[in-house]
Amino acid sequence: MSEAFRQEVREWLEANCPPSMRGPVDPAEAFLAGGQRTDDHQLWIDRLHERGWTVPAWPKEYGGGGLDWEQNRILQDELRRINARPAVTGMGVTMIGPALLEFGTHEQKLEHLPKIASGEINWCQGYSEPNAGSDLASLRTKAVEDGDEYVINGQKIWTSGADRADWIFCLVRTDFDAPKHEGITFILFTMHQPGVTVKPIKLISGLSPFCETFFNDARALKKNVVGEVNKGWTVAKRLLQYERTSIGGIGGGGGSRENSMENVAKRYIGEQDGRIADDQIRSRVITHRMNDKAFSLTTRRNQEELKSGLAPGPASSMFKYYGTEQNKRRYELLLSIMGTQAVGWEGDSFDDYELGTTRAWLRSKANSIEGGTSEVQLNIIAKRVLELPEPPAANQG
Image (cartoon, rainbow, N blue to C red; front, side, top):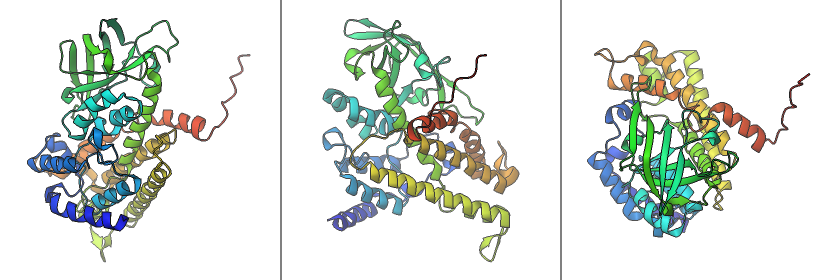
């Protein structure tokens, strides 16, 4: 049965995946494209969505493919085999979608999940605030009841993609008298309304994927509370685990075959007898590739252990920590290989790939901050995975 399904998938992909949708997005493409969809990209979305394969493991009634674990594994294998690009990505697929499947009502799932599956709606995350980052539970954005709605006032920061988002999943405080981990509610509302102001933040990379978001009497329907009122911290923590699992996946990115680490090294350093000419760089490239492979196999083993449908747990912090640090190491290695050609900002002396690599290298510095800093992940690993004892309190003398 599985081999028949594999053959079906292989034939369908060969017939339906546009050639331009085969191969990872290189740094230059990611920078120059600006996130806009080409005609081929939209065609790829439409064809996959018709099969339910934009979110293949989601139930069919919510826009998914209803595939079991083994079928989804085969589909992912075949997508990787032809280097097919993901059709629908973003926080809808990786974060709020899984959270709604676990905590949402049937009505919430019917309203929001099919639009995520079709790529119709973009989402952003309203978690961090100027005074509530790593200590997220200190958030102050408040929501006050008004009939069938909540009126929301406050500010969020580092809201990735908020300037392009249609909806936000947001943590608000609905009880200021409760302990800080209580009194928090997880709610969804549209960004396209009076009272929502978004200001992009220009980063060192020259891009503005992060934003400040202000709420001035913005409104959210009570029916869009996910989970229980004042119990949103439970949903928030689970969503962070989905987020960290997703962010950790960037660790094995290698660009297109033409711009693989090995080929980039040969292009900039030279080759001898078909190998990278510099012994030290060759050793570093091989080590990086081996670490990528080991990380990929470890994440796959974890997926197999979770095939019963269990949600990710504290181990997601391990993948987030290693994956993001590995991605940062990748760009540091590219810098060593490309030299000054990897730090160009503009001008005819640099091609598109080089300009894109510069910005991707700078952008990678945020990898170990977003979704919870590496230091926070190490604390979680120590406490929740390794179950190490708390250090003794300092002697107060």
